[in-house]
Structure formats: structure tokens, C-alpha cells
Image (cartoon, rainbow, N blue to C red; front, side, top):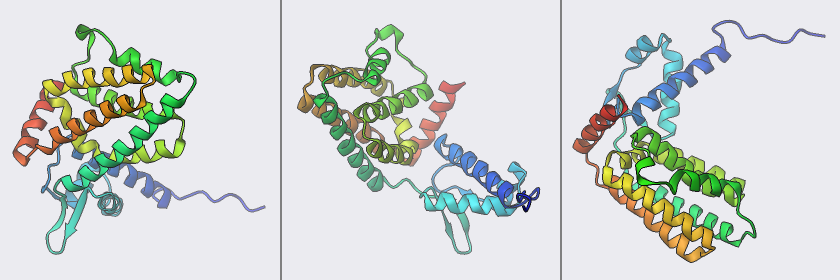
Length: 239
């Protein structure tokens, strides 16, 4: 029997893993606004600071291009794509459709899924106990909405919702640099959970749609100047 093939050091498997790590690092820098819309990206600079050759760097950049985060111009090279709010609007509409469908399924159940109890423990709390760290908040907010899909029990809906969540994360977290929106998120989440507990599907859907649209409208007002201000606010809060 032939011995199993083992990839050589520095071979395709290692290069692929390195490309994955570079992809994740650049995307994190985009989400943290370390890289801003319109910023140029140098393959050589990325290779130097990641200790990689240009091949995995280029693989990572092409993947980021497919995902809509960066693009390349002839003679100019790679750059961070401007935020396309028309696309984000469409993705928020998909969120509304999926989450309202999940709410209808939840209200039709004859039992309360455990995921709802977990969400209640996080969001229906005293004002003095509320989270204030912006990074923790946007993560908790994502978990709230993902929790609704998980509780509804449709795995394909949940999978599509995860993809949409990933694609809007770069702007969604901007909602949590505004104290008024932080306060509103707690109140709105609590209202949605109350309507679910009562089994009032239409009221829960109305509250959910209003909540998602308010979040979308808040980030829709962000300008390039606002992005720099939001980045500074995020850095200050995360120190």
C-alpha cells in the first residue's frame, strides 16, 4: 500500500492556511476601520508585515475582492472599496424578511425554546447592569438576532442569515458608537422579546422591523468624515 501523501513544508496546504490568516487579518482591519474606504493596499507591504510571500497575499486579496471588500484598478493596484449603501439597504431588507419569518415560526410553537430564555437574561435587565463596551455590544446584538433564527429551528434560514450578518458587519457595528442607539437597542430588544412571550406575531414583527430599520437608517447617515470619527470613538472605547 502506498504511503499517504504528506505535503511538503511551504507547499500548497501551508500556503492556503497562510492565505486564510492574511484574509482574516485584513478583514479585521477593515471592520475595525484601520483600513478606510479608498485606502490603497500594497501587496509588498502586506507581505512584509505578515511575513509571507506575495502569493498567499494575492490569494487573500482576490478572496476579499470576491467578497466585495476590495478591488483592483489597472496601473493603480488594490484599494478598499467605498461603502455601497444601496447594497447594504438590500441586505437589511433580507434580514427583515428572514427575521420576521423566524418570529412567525416562534409564535406558532407550543413551547418556548431555550434560546429565548437566554436572550431575556441578556436584554431584559436593569439599566445599571447594561453593557457599555461598543465591541461587546455589537457582538451581543448579532447574537440576539442570530438567536431568533436559531430558536425558530430552520437551519437553512439561519445559514443565510449568518451570511447576511457577515456582509453588513462592517457598518452594523457603527450603530454602537452612538449612546442613544445603545439605549434604544436595549429597549427595542426587550419589546420584541415581550411580544414574543405574549405570542403576538404581528406585534413582534412590527417591533422587529422598526428596530432593524432604525439601525439601518442610523448607519446610513455615516459619511467618510463620520467613519473617521467613528473609528476614533471605537478606539477610545476599546482602550
